[in-house]
Image (cartoon, rainbow, N blue to C red; front, side, top):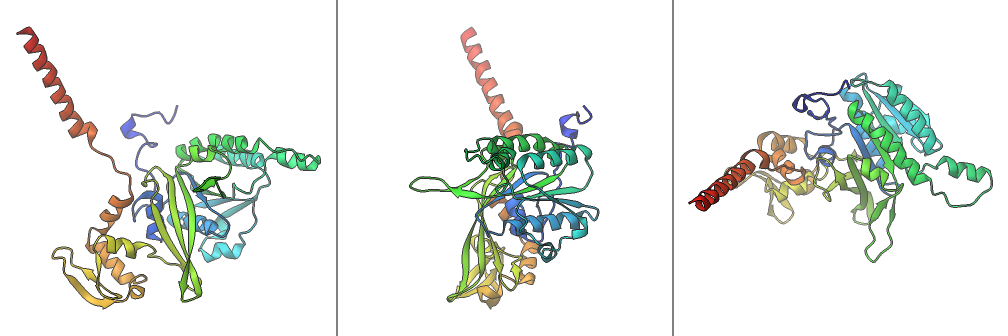
Length: 353
């Protein structure tokens, strides 16, 4: 095969292409790093209605277009709830968006496989499906046309087949696919959110977000929402990590969402009185700079740029969220093997003696 190579020279196992978004904590939720972002493969954004799922997908699609001026977005639409003005809101170039209406899973599988077969590694394409959760199977449609009301047992199998076929192409051809899905509550004393569509999506996905939300209130007036990205599955981020993203009615997505609380946790910013905060000198531990209210810090580009550039804050976030690997194969593992070999050799010499 053309892709067969020595492992350390493999394009497949080499450094992944990362598409950074302008929102640092979205990058963290995708890759575990502020400077990371969207990677090739399947990313699933799941949650109830009106949980900013489509908006998250468009933020990522816009970032892809910005990194690659020739980049094209294939937008498969099953809900028809995303007007062209919504694309413009998130700075997506609609002249580089191919819109394909879809009515059932089999139709999506057919068209998507035709597209992927015609693509090669190096073609700049990002795929968005909005949404998997709202797609019927062909059998479900045919039964409705025939007047049948029997339960459809084929939909989950069709969705599993779709992603089983698509996933290898995404990795081999370096293509990100963002699929939006719905969730439902499992039955039980402590019900949790479960993705619809069966287990096939979870098996195939590189990243799965389950998105929750809380109201952002000032007094009794709702100013916007705090969306909580629960990382259900990831190749890069510690699972069950929670990443907050704030969206206000007036200002849209807060660029520095979630970073304030992490900066306090890591002692990069500290309280200097009731309701007041200051930056911390990382060498001396002393509070420095002007006293500021929290609301004057959370959106302050100058403060966050300073902290990110002049401290180890990026590494702190990486350590908090990113999956790490222990050096068992080199140092520690080798020393354990050497110690075991010496013990065996010593035992054999004792027996011979």
